[in-house]
Length: 202
Image (cartoon, rainbow, N blue to C red; front, side):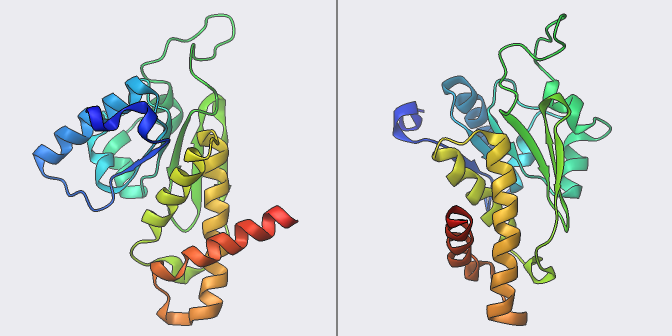
């Protein structure tokens, strides 16, 4: 794991295109433990979701998980996102809050036509809008990468996830207008930059 030293990178996105072989899942599990230990903000997406501990958030991990509905059922089963996010933490008897865990440090984004964002202390919101043509292969990877890029710039997981969901949906509308029915995920990134630039100027 020397290549994964803390001073070599600022955030990690893990999962897209990995596959679900047993050996791969075991290595992903090891990586997640390592990222937790060295404090690297991590986005867990796609195949990496299958390496998460059943029904709970990985102990000590700072970051965002981005399962779609089927992946979320497979991971959490009957556990609610709120209880899964608290798993493995000590709760302060006075405040009722997790000890030693930043309140913006863990997020589950259930992706879909409407994204549902779950955070600690009951934080919850939905990301709506966008365009139906965004339901194409690769857009989930783009969301994970957008969240990861915001984490790498120093944003906490909760605001990073919220901003990324907004950017993806706004960029999706612009991309659909430009490309119509032939929209590909690879058409979206330039519009992500334009939406972010416009939001900054406003």
